[in-house]
Amino acid sequence: MNLKARYIDMESAEYTCVLHDNDAIELGVREQDRIRIKHERNSIVALLQTTDTVVNQGEVGILGRAYGVLGPERDEIVDVVPTSKPESVKYIKKKMRGEELTTEEIRTIINDIVQHNLSNIELTAYVVALEINGMNIRETADLTMAMVETGDTITFDRGPIFDFHSVGGCPGNKITLIVVPIVAAAGLIIPKTSSRAISSAAGTADIIEVFADVNMDAHKLRTVAEKVGGTLAWGGSMSLSPADDTIIKVEYPLGIDPHAQLLASVMSKKKAAGANCLVIDIPTGAGTKVPTIEEAQAFARDFMDLGEKLGIEVRCAITYGEQPVGRAIGPALEAKEAITILEGSKHPSSVYEKSIGMAAMVLEMGGIKNGEAKAKEILESGQALTKFREIVAAQGGNPNISSSDITVGMYKHDIISAMSGYVNSIKNKQLVQIARAAGSPKDKGAGVVLNKKRGNRVLEGETLYTIYADHEAKLEQAIELARKLDPMVVENMIISKLPNSSKYTVIEETSSNVRSERN
Ligand SMILES: O=P(O)(O)OC[C@H]1O[C@H](OP(=O)(O)O)[C@H](O)[C@@H]1O
Ligand SMILES: Nc1ccnc(=O)[nH]1
Image (tube, rainbow, N blue to C red; front, side, top):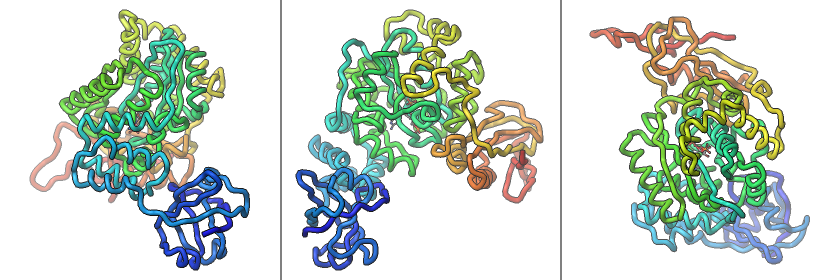
């Protein structure tokens, strides 16, 4: 059917088009069916919405970026034909039944993802099928290669190329901002890309965006890394492993990151960016993606096996993840904390120590003896700060950036302990929920700052943590959630008295060991 193309100034997660009810009947299609729209040599597949008001009979409305991809002029005639579900839906269902997928079936799924042929419902089914049924190492390697082959790859003029990546899952893990400048200042090349938040409240790309432009294409990644030694870029902005960011967009709302998809997500980007030597950080413990040391060891083996198949030398560090790294959670709060370490602070010690430890592993892969001493020397002499500023400047940020330039949320609220005791545990996932409710990662100033950490002595009336927000309404939402979730457990030596005793003094109806105080 030939119809006039109309741009609709709205965006949706999947390519979407709108037909008048009468045209939809004539074409024999219904809402959520797929339509192929052809214009000259371009063609897209879009999901259908029908209407009797938004477009007239004889027109097809095309939403946002889908219009740009197709490229017709205003009112130009395009050809509209019904089309069937993509082949990969069959293979997604096969994985839902727990069956093994062939190399070709995995390639078909990734091709359909890259070409935006799958609806968000189908993509979500894919991610959930992987979360429940997983993939063996052969399937994972095929998945990784399919993600590499559907994108660009970079070849550097000189090498070897170093890289570092965290599997995530531990809030406050801002160490990439410190590791990359240390490694680059030592003279190694590290073209680091990061993703946005997946299970946490702020991915590294969300943090860097506070003070520099994280968007770059593969060519710029290479030229910046060759010029200043390192990058702090967002992987989703470039064509390396383009399936990755589309998949992350459906993982984020669910807060899940299936094992096989995580392996392929990280390793496909490393392969595409030309890495030869890679260090992987695996935060481990309750409330992370990897609850036990045994699982972390198996994960490390998978990374190393996959590295061998891809020609990348991989070393892994199993790290402590049972409570946040440092005290700050949320883009601006984490940026500020990381920059204070680059400026010479040794606190929070978890951020300082983890950054030194990870950088040391990369340096030693680069043949530098006593990596820890070298990493400390580079950090403490200010060379890492100088390198950080060079990278920031190369990415369009302030070349003299300092921690005091970073502004955090103007609305804040202290959560106060209603009892004296010790912090027994800090629940990562609940803290993430509170930081997200406060607006993180979209609202850059939003998040949480911990005043107490595990094992700390707490006196009644002391602040446990502070919630920050850019908007008052979101602060209220976060406070309400904080009361309900109670992410910091304070206990004294007597945990409970039986019969008929409560372990907490109940201060407010909705809270257990916390009460709230405005400031
Ligand atoms: O949101 P969760 O699931 O924690 O994990 C995602 C984070 O982990 C990795 O960190 P890095 O880039 O190595 O610093 C990713 O790039 C991303 O920023
Ligand atoms: N799934 C992922 C986890 C961590 N980093 C990534 O890039 N991808």
